[in-house]
Amino acid sequence: VYGLFCVPFFVITRLILSYNILHFFQELFFVYKNVNSFWFLLCIVICYLIYPLLYKCMDKKRYIYTILIAYIVGIVLLQTYFPEFYFRFEILISRIPIFVIGAILGEKVYKKEEVDPYILVIAIGFLFSRRLLFAVVTRMPVISNYTSIINRLYGGLIGLCLTIVLVMLMKYIENTQLFKLLGFMGTFTLETYVFHIVYRWFLLTHLRLPIDSYVEILIFLLLYTVTSFVFGYILQLFFQKIRWKRKRERCCKGIGNLYRTGNLGCEEESCFCQCF
Image (cartoon, rainbow, N blue to C red; front, side, top):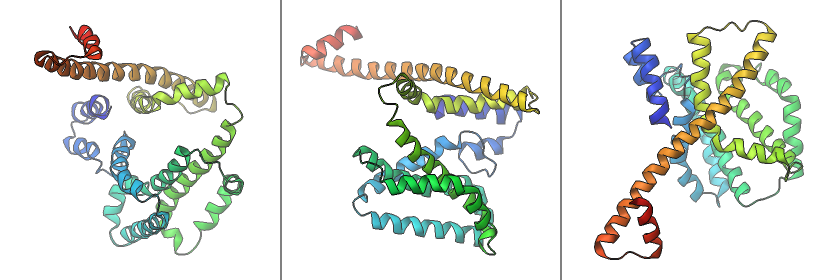
């Protein structure tokens, strides 16, 4: 997805349209403080590289919590003593703690553990009191200097609490058409994400559509959301076709080797017929 869709977008917008080769490489490799296009994909890659280590530590969660606290302290120290470096990579490094928390919850989802009622109460309470908590925390003398870190962690906690509440609500719509629709849409959310970045850039930056009034904003969001999901699904079909073609080529190459050695079984013969 990143190589076939995102890199060409960077080439067009940074090299062809703006002729800025420096910004091209900075955004391509995630070292530009104003990255606003596809940062999420590179973040996913980095997080998945970290995940095997986290998975091995799942049975020793106290170590994970210790590392998590140490990481947050490290971010604070980084902003304090190396602010230029911190703000260049802030969009990435400030999101790692939320990923770690998500990895811990992912294990619970895999084991199909029930959400404890007190956790649900805390999540709902946080969502209702989030503005007040944020206002109080950001006005504290020392902590107010680290608003950027607080914003990221705070936004992550909001997403986490919303996820917990939505998971509980999903229990009441199982075996319904709405549940099936949401499950279907969930299969191409990544493609929808990458398409909406390009689509938004084209409409707002290139065409410069006016969205000043509430009515214009509402119409824009409605059309923008529907179109993004439609083309996200089309994009998924395109990538599926590419993956299927590559898988078929590998299969046929392997079958060809078996055919030449005379080790072709019944299942391989069926695949052989499809290849040739």
